[in-house]
Image (cartoon, rainbow, N blue to C red; front, side, top):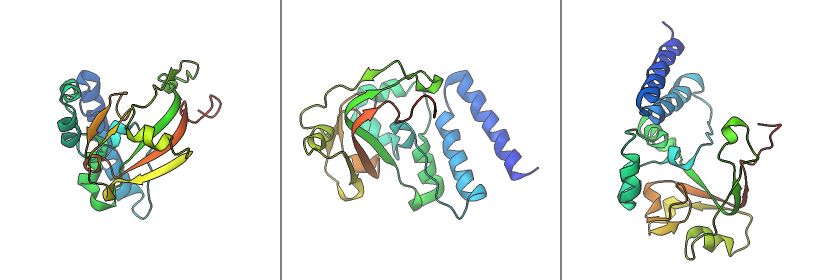
Length: 189
């Protein structure tokens, strides 16, 4: 049996686990990413664009910073894709979260509904989003490997303000002043 089909059988297992209990989805995504990096594209760099939670490097660090939200996530025992990829692939993996100062999102974009919009709440005073928004920068990158102190991110995870030492959770933050849906139009999606 080829390595591809062996990986595809693993995908079926993760899909079934996800369908029957919403567990294994992120583990499967992380294992697929590791497989792609090792088997399919060993000499290439791979960029994965995902919801911030999926690229978390340490679920334990995120859970420790916000126990109520950790209890909610406990219903879905799964290891984030970013943590799996870092475990499997080592130091070459970088987890970068996306934050915004203002704008809107489209929670139903996955089904091509860009009409339904959720306006982003104004960032909490003192949060990283409000601090960067005040600079009038349209885009910024913060290398968290150089920032070991704690700070608050306003909307990193379902608009739940969380203060923690973010360098344990992500390697960096990509800031976009104004988020407009997913940054794509209905025709391109």
